[in-house]
Image 1 (tube, rainbow, N blue to C red):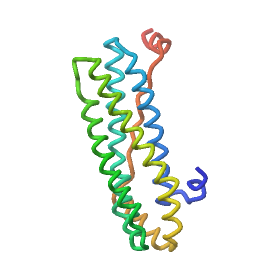
Image 2 (tube, helix red, strand yellow; image 1 turned 135 degrees about the horizontal axis):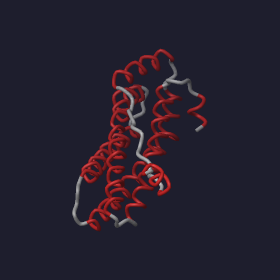
Image 3 (cartoon, helix red, strand yellow; image 1 turned 60 degrees about the vertical axis):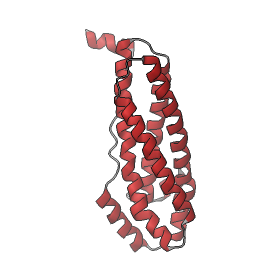
Image 4 (tube, rainbow, N blue to C red; image 1 turned 180 degrees about the vertical axis):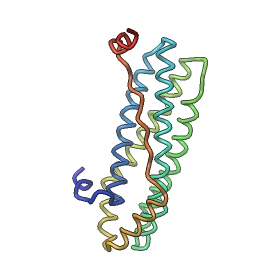
Length: 190
């Protein structure tokens, strides 16, 4: 995204946008895993995909730090400058996303014996979560962050905000397991 590249490395808006990009990658991986999961029926394959779902769920829960930095650092500065209505909406969306993320995490750890029930529950939850999360990220990247840059002008304010954000911490996304091809499985068996 052009705005992201215009900002200095370490600027809090750039960091938030980079985390949104990483979250988009997790969304793509989750979409892929869900598609694979919906078409599977072999026990060993199910185990791998369920482990992959757990890894994606863990990364989605890391987004809470992203939301905390927005709510505790960015939003108050915007509110000081008269911006409030969009922030109420963003806070509500954070709560809604948190509920979905925790439900997804619980489901990813579940070992439901009825595989078709698991497939159905994962599909329903993933579809809802991905739609809401993608919509939220779009609002942040194209509306909220550009607006913040327009209303918060003082560099010393951004420097203080950066310190406050660092005290909360950044998202610590983990690398996701990749699906091994049959060729890779055969090679590792030799």
